Image (cartoon, rainbow, N blue to C red; front, side):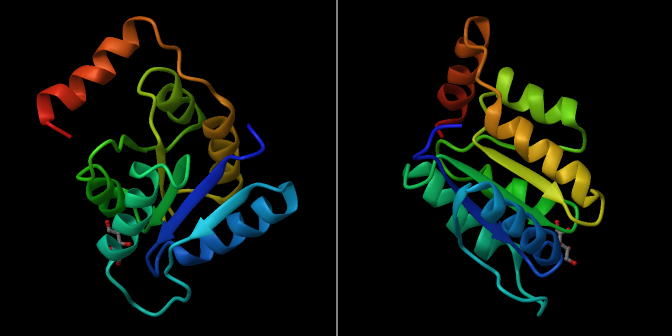
Length: 150
Ligand code: RB5
């Protein structure tokens, strides 16, 4: 992971406890981030925070995003509406690896109610440290944006 890499964080209330623990881990590891909220377990709407973090990645203010809601579904649906975003909802380390290698995903989406802290950290580390494989996958990823216009 490069020194200048900054991660955009976003969650709703359901994702907040896991995000807080992952933020502590990132602090310990010196992984830089901008947290776009939310900041408590008070009930909020996941699109507000997923959209803010996705725009940050899309505009290249941040390199990658980490989005967390109860299942990871709502935040990934929202993020994938933002131009240039390839958000991958991952449930296993293998999915996190493939999301980077084959899909050049720029946002990792996790479900706080479906993923343990240990699994989440493993997936984050894999996501941040696995390069895009390029080659034949390049054309496929480019085609996503060509076909969808985003
Ligand atoms: C909130 O209860 C829950 O619906 C939300 O966190 C998420 O799982 C939506 O996809």
